[in-house]
Every structure is written in structure tokens, then in C-alpha cells.
Length: 434
Image (cartoon, rainbow, N blue to C red):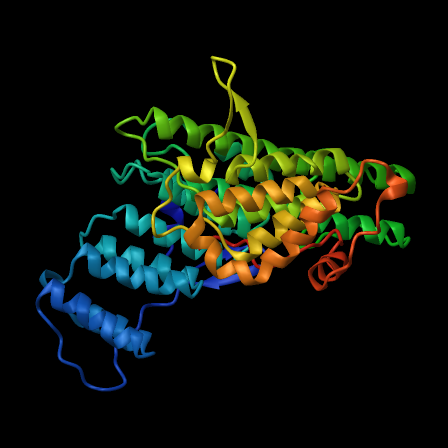
């Protein structure tokens, strides 16, 4: 049974989170040196930021605690809660929320975003329960949840590896309005799927080595099909493989939903619905997963070829008059702003590597041509790294169809490096969204 948020916030001294005891200590009220206490909320917020950024968070909080109530504001208390949240100090964040409410300041969306962040970064094993009740309590405080708050809840599920609840939460989101999924929503879910694939491969490796996987850990994978205690060894392996396939299929569905949603919003934008942008972080998550499952689920992994072409171009389409034209790349259609990276070396490496594994050399040639056409500015710093290699793939793509007349593909430095990376746990960098 989930806790009541009122119970959590009312219990000032301490509360139990199962195996972990989290104490609700009082906030600091004394400073290490003497400070002037501003009477103006704006100056108090500025003072808090100045002192906390100097590495004296306890002093900064004590200044707020010593300030007169008329000199405080919701913004000041949001700064206090956010500072504790970034450090994963859930109990202190909850206590700061209690102090905020005790002084009569109403919480805002920013308040709940910070509390959910504290749940995600904290080490309490009751963090999911607290986060769910925190999110549900927003209506009680008259605060309408936004997609930022939803993403905060999803981040808790991500950190605590609760994929089932994350998918259930996503399925309840509306397709329009302020709670419609954002780029961060899709990135969080895709990252969860890729992480699950990695953990499932670790479980599969243990089974192949004859080790048991019954021991529960904090990184326990989500199983679409559960493994019963009396299941035979061979059946366990088959079930884990099935779960890998299902998780990867779910990841492809998330991408397809994102792409369809993004295209729809780009052409039929509702006034209350924010447009969806493109960023390489989401695409890299998908392509890394394609590499991870390539040897075991080749037909599914090869769908990555179409995803690459959809995003960056290189495919043809037939219009209503029967004329064949180049399709508009998704990354061009979505018109990403300066906050998002539309192309970088990692995503090019992943894309070329995947096509190389499938011997889709012409795909590489078309991809590079499309990148030069549509993303000339982004390609320029990458030209020295990839252009000579693309030229080699161009030669391979133009070889005769007769296998007896083909020469063995040249193993360049890049191709050798990619060959070494062809493992189920393929990784370039972290998927964790900022």
C-alpha cells in the first residue's frame, strides 16, 4: 500500500523506508560565520545562491531559516529544495517542503519538479512510493502537472529500474496539451529499454556460464515473461532471449511513436501542444540498441537502416504524380533549435557502423550525400574523420554483383575499431538525459 503524502510530510522526526532508515533532521539554523540577512525576497534568493555556490549549503539554508517570513518567497524555498534535490538528499528536501508550507508559501510546479528529482537521485528504497504520492498530491495543492513533472516521475522509475510503471505512466499521457510527451519523455523511455537490454544480456551470459539468476539485485531486469522457480535451464535461456526481443521491440515502438508524433505536430501543431524537436541523444540510444541485439535479432536490428534514412535522408518517395523525389529528412522537418544537437561524430559512427555490419555500403554513400546536402555546417568538422572512409565504402558499393569478382573489404582503422565494439553491451557514451 502506497504511503499518503500527508503522512510523509507530517511525520517531522523520521520515517522508515524498509531496509533504509531515512531521518528527517531539522534544517540548519546557525551559520559558520556571521552574514547579513536580507529583508527582500529577491535579495534573499540572490544571497542564498551566492553562499550555496561557494560550497556552504548549510549556511545558505540557515540564512533562509533566520530570515523574516516577509523576506522569504516560494522562489527562495524552491531554491532550497532544488539544492537538496541535486544532491539526492531526499529527507532534507522533504523537510524544506514542510518548512515552506508551514510559512504559508504555496508550492509550484518547480517545487514538485525538485521533489521528484530528490526521489530520483536519493538512495531511499521507498523513493518510488514517495514520488508517486508527491505527483498525485499536486492536485491537492492546486498545481496542474505539466510534462516536466511527468518526466520527473519517469526519471524516478528510470533510476529505480521500474520499467513496468514507466510504460504504464507513458500510456496514460494525452497526445495533445501540456502533458503531451516531450523529447525528454521519449528519451527517458528509450534509455530504460536499452538499459534493460544490457541487463538482460548480463543475465543471459550468467545462464550460459551455468550460474543462477535467482538472486535479486537493485538492477533486476524487467521481464515481459517471468521466470518461475522450477523453470529448466534451457527454458530460462529461451525466456531471457524472448524478453530481449520484446524489450527491443518496445524500444522500436517508442521510436516509431516519437517519429509519428513529431511529424504530426510539425504540420498540425495545436496551440496548447508544444512541438517536438530532434536531438541525437534519442537516436544514439536507438542505434546503440540495434548494435546490441544485431547478432541475435538481425531482422529487427536492421530496422535501424530505415531509421537512419528517415532521420537524415537518403531514401526516395513517389509523389501523387508518380515522380520519384528525395524524402524530407525528419531532422530537417523538425527544425531543432540551438538547444539540441542535430548531428555529431558519435551518431555518424553508430550509423555507418550499423550499415557496415549489414554490408549496406550504398546506404552509407547515400547517407553521407544527404548529410552534405542538408547539414553542411554540422558535417564540416566531421569531414576529415569520415570522408576517406566513405570513399572506401563508395568503392565497395560499386563492386560487381558476382561475389567471385569482389575483393575483400579493406579493414580501415575505423572498421577495426567498430569490429571490436560488436558486443551485446555496445556503448559510446551515457544515455542519461540532462
